[in-house]
Amino acid sequence: MNDCLFCKIEKGEIPSSKVYEDEDVIVFKDIAPKADVHLLVVPRKHIIGLNDLLPEDQALMGKMMLLLPKLAKEQGLENGFRTIINTGKGGGQEVFHIHIHLLGNTSKKSLPFV
Ligand code: AMP
Ligand code: ZN
Image (cartoon, rainbow, N blue to C red; front, side):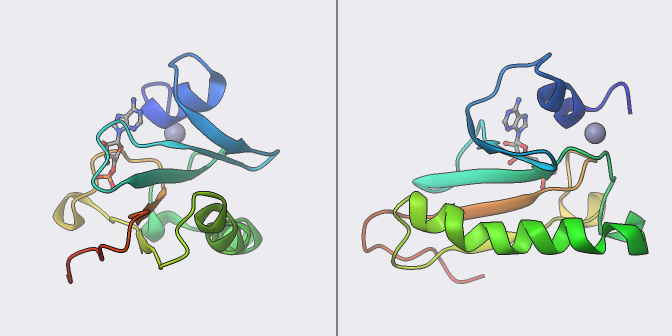
């Protein structure tokens, strides 16, 4: 946990381009954006990934889900957006602190199909 990049960002030990924060969640720009808008929605609590969620995390994860459309609207993603949660090395997870990617283009161009 001490070595966790997103815990360090959460504590302000590593800088980030934050766009939102509250007592439970921080949101900052991905350092290597894959679309016009690419945000990472991260709980302050260190949870490794979806496989590690506990019943007590249900409200927190629900809160993050409800935040997504608000952030998308604020970022001008009126045309739609994509959310991704990578789980484990096989799922492409690189940072082992759970996060939701929020991606979208501000112009009319759509994201490629996956
Ligand atoms: P994942 O592959 O789902 O674990 O996603 C990790 C994401 O974190 C990648 O999209 C990286 O570009 C992003 N990332 C890595 N380091 C930083 C950083 N210091 N600030 C913001 N985003 C980062
Ligand atoms: Zn962490």
